[in-house]
Length: 451
Image (cartoon, rainbow, N blue to C red):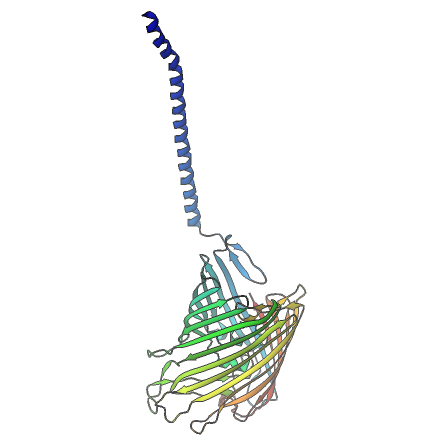
C-alpha cells in the first residue's frame, strides 16, 4: 500500500516544476504581447500627431524655378504655385503719314498673376493688367485635369479661335499681332474642354461676355467655339508641320440703344484695327462702325504653321459673317476676311512644337542668347459694298520686318519696321485727322521683361 501511495506522490512532485515552468512562459508571452500592443498604439498615436502637425503647418513647397519661371512645388508635385507677369515698354515712330498718328512711348502691358495646381488635379489662374493705369482682369478660371490628356476650365479664358490670339503676348513674333486678331473673340466667361495628345489637339467651349462688360441688365449673348489641330509630319519636337481649323458662332450682348430709330435693345458688334502698331498709338484706320440688330456672328479659320530646326512659319485665314435680325429689312448681312503669313529664323536658340496645345512654342535661347529675324505680310478687308447698307470699313496691307534679341529667358528686345498701305476707305477718326488712304511706315521697339 505504501508503495502504491508513494508512486502518485512522486509523479506529482516531478510534474509540478514543469507545470510551473509552462505557466511562467505563458505569462511572459502574454506580457510581451501587451507590451507590443502598447508600443504599436503609441507609434500610431505619434504618427497621427505628426500628421496633424504637418497638416496644421501646411504643404511645404520648394523652389523649382527653371527657364525663367518663378515656380514652387511640393515634393510629390501635387501642389504647385507659379508667379507670372510681364512688363512691355513700347516706342512707336511714324514716317510719311498725313494724319496725326503721334510718336509715342508707353507701357503696353503691365501684368501680374499666378498659376496654381491644387491636390494634383485642380488648377487655377488669375491675371490682372495695369497698363494705362487701369485694372483689366485677364484670365480668371478654375480647372480640372484629372481626366487623361484633358482639361476642363470654368471662368474667363481665351476662346479657342484665332491662332495668333492663342499665342501669348509675351511670345508673339512681332510687337503686335496681325490684323485678323481683330476678329478673335478673345477672353470670355464660359466653360471649355481641352484635349491634347502627341500629334492632336481639340478644344470646345460655350461662352458669354467678358468680365466687366455692362449690358444694363439685359440678356447676355451666348456663343460656342471649337478648334482642332493635327501634326501630319512630326519626326521631332523641333521638326513639325501643323494644320488647324477653327469655328465660332456667337450672339452679341444686348445693349441699350438711343430709343429713337432703333429699339431700346440694339444688338451691336464692331470690328476695328490699328495698322499693326502698339496700342500706345491709338489711331485705328480700319473700322466697320457699329453694326446694329445683329442676330449672330459666324467665323471660320484655317491655320498652317510649323517649325523645322531654325526655321518657323505661321499663317492664318479668317472669315467673319454678320447675320442681321430677320426684322431688320433696311440692313444687310455682311462678310469680312483677312489673312497673314509670317516666317522666322533663329540663331543661337530653338523653337519647339507643342502638339498638345497646337502651337509653335516660344524661342528658347542658348547660353549666349538668341537672335531672331522675322518677316510678315498681313491684310484685312472690312469693306462690303452691298446695295443696301454698304460698309466702308477700309482694307489695308502691311509688310513687316522684325529683329528680336533674347539675352536670356526673361528679357526680350524687339525692333519692327512696317510699311502700311491703306485703301481709299481706310481712315482714322477726326481726332487723328480723318484723312483716307494714308500710306506710311512705322518703326517700333519693345523692351520686355517676363517671368
